[in-house]
Amino acid sequence: MANEMTTDEALPNESTASTTASIDALETERVTELRVAQEKAERLFHEIGVRGLIRSGISESQLNEEIYALANEMYGIKTFWHKRIVRAGRNTLLPYDDNPPDLTIREDDILFLDLGPVFETWEADFGRTFVLGSDPAKLKMKNDVEIAFAAGKRFFEENPAVTSRELFLHAQSLASQFGWAFGGPIAGHLIGQFPHERIAGDKVTLYVHPDSNLPMRSLDEKGQKRHWILEIHFVDTERQIGGFYEELLTV
Image 1: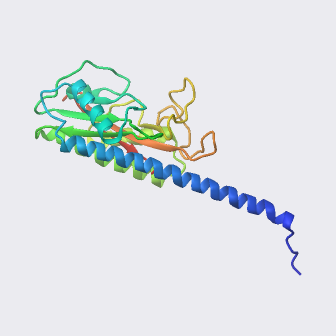
Image 2 (image 1 turned 30 degrees about the horizontal axis):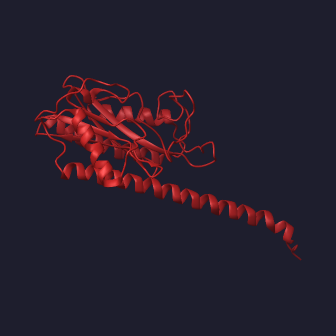
Image 3 (image 1 turned 180 degrees about the horizontal axis):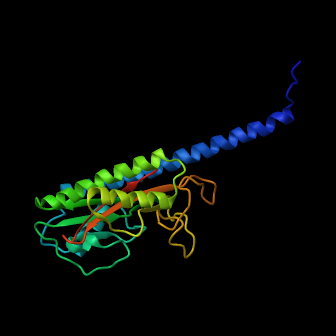
């Protein structure tokens, strides 16, 4: 005859099930909020195009200010969790940490935007490349970073144990496959609720960095799943052009 389960024996299982359900619900909420934040960033970029803000004859800094005003108009956004990046011409070669001289956007230019707006308390990070004119190399660059992002996301999805270093090296290899060089010291970073998880003074661990062996699906300090941004930055130093594509990797 099977032993009957007592009330005391049942409680731990019920407690575990309740805890698991709470964790799952919290994760569903986090994923939803991150997705909503990205969708709003996409709409912001769409409106930038519709209103013709990207045009020749204005400076990077002017476009930057016009985008800030538009974000405030559309969503009341005044907070960006990282500096707003508008890079044109030869400045597209440079990674995030650089602060190059302000350039004027030309008629046949290539440029990219990298914005990190905060919607309510949730971060977005969104980057796209734009081409004015019909230069074949610039159009190829724009197209290649988009295709490479999709390839990088597939690599992440197909390799559950992937580390930050392994994903960075894959992003580098994609640049070579497309005939470009990889332009940044990282290929992505953590994203989440503002302000997201940080380790003081650490510029390696929570980045898609060649020196980070962190399994990207490891849990954070609160026992939650980490969510990541993938960023693809290709450059051609001979032509003095670069392209950039960035959005959520894990959602």
